[in-house]
Image 1 (cartoon, rainbow, N blue to C red):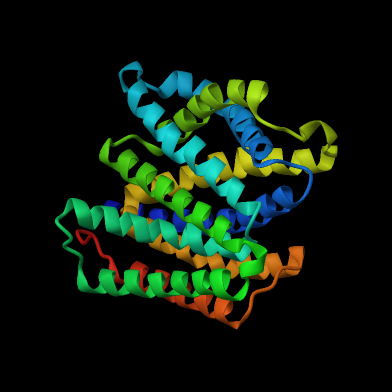
Image 2: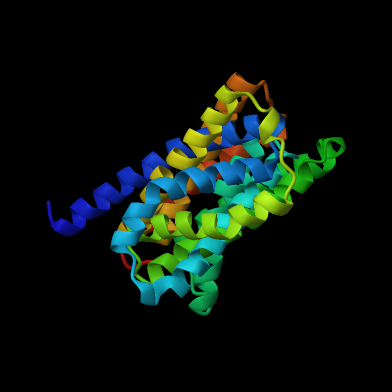
Length: 296
């Protein structure tokens, strides 16, 4: 097996790991947002834990001349993404996050790349994008017209903005050729440095009244699994197989998240929502199969 083929194989394995980690992330985050935490608490746990672990690696690997780039990556892939997605969980269920975030990331990624390339999109990539978009539209239809009393649309809008923020992070990281370890440790450290003082002084918190097991669950999953492990694997996959294929595979998350949300949180979707999940997942598979090295 050639080195390029081996690298792509590892890239796909990393993307598969992200699918599992982010499916769990959707469930754990929704659980926390429905319970004892504000979105700001969950973000603080994410940044605080991840920064403590990442700081020694950051100090050893980061280059001072790239600190401006690290700041931008932290604003997109750290603070911006996290606050948007955790706020969305306050309004909408797990499966909606999976569709609008993990289905929205490939949508925004391909759209941004196409805009930069003069809107030239390979035919199969375009088909995959349109299929994924159709699934997102189905979920949006259910949110606005079927479950309108629940206010899901507010969460859906926040999730879609979070997806755009993460897509920009992935594209900038690849464009600047910042390695996965450096990128993720920099995001953790810069996010904590910028966010935690603001959180401590001004943002509402219910952390003091939360139970220790709930705090431990959020701290470990958000700070270690989601921020560092999943973030590193996504960064590695983006470098190895490209941002389009890496982001397309994330659209496999909705099905797993919906099953986990139904089983662990008692959440359910109507027929339109379930159809949306199936369609988004089909778009992900088309995107992963359609994009070969050298394609958009």
